[in-house]
Amino acid sequence: MSFARALAVILLTLAATSLAAQPRETITVDASAPAEPFPHFWEHMFGSGRAVLSLRESYREDLRAVRAVTAVRYVRFHAVLHDEMGVYGVNGHGAPVYNFSYIDQVYDGLLANGVRPFVEISFMPAKLAARDVRQSFWYRPIVSPPADYKRWDALIMALARHLIERYGIDEVSQWYFEVWNEPNLDFWAGEPKQATYFTLYDHTARSLKAVDARLRVGGPATAQAAWVAAFLRHCKDNQTPVDFVSTHV
Image 1: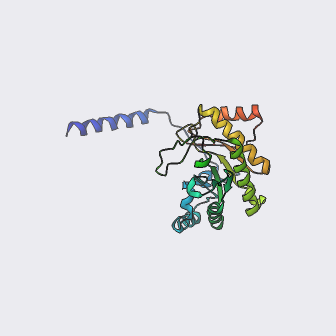
Image 2 (image 1 turned 30 degrees about the vertical axis):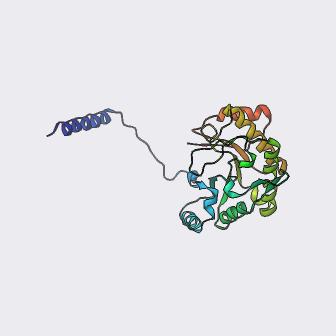
Image 3 (image 1 turned 60 degrees about the vertical axis):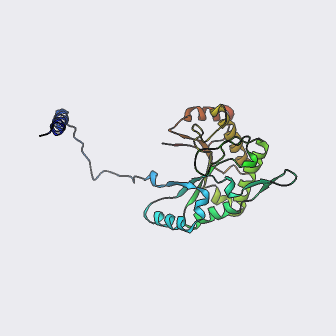
């Protein structure tokens, strides 16, 4: 027997001996006791790339296949405000120009296939960014704060009004609006990160609620449950609307 094999046998024997030495615990299950359904919360929302991909028929075929075998109710993706979606521009006089045509097609496709949007409000349109700073995803999304918060607020309010006009408040009030994506990582270039994200959240949440209080907004959309306590404390101290807490683990 080789040394490595002998060592493996010894380690397995020691592990088995250690398990055998542990006290046993008896669990009794009363099959006749009252029961409650166990909801599969992890099946209710899926994340999937970036918004523009959902315009492909192959994406929608995949969505229908997933919908047929799971309880998925919401789909979340990045970059609904990215320049490839053509949402924000400026005219020759420097005034903002909005185009929600691709957003309509994206959300029409989700709703037609039996799921609702979990709207990640991201990333920054180039014409609205304070700086041209980009995250390392291959499509290079801009992760800068806005150069002008009045124009950011106006964009968010225009988007909210448009969605309500197109789909109705009874429908859109069942969506979730999540402010940004993982601002504690390299998806947010504000400095200091947390304080500038809270500014973005405050403006976005209040702009949505100014259009209709029934719209659901939340954050901090961080990785690994970062900032959650500080976020809730900030919202309480500043009376900023928050309907849900989101984080990614």
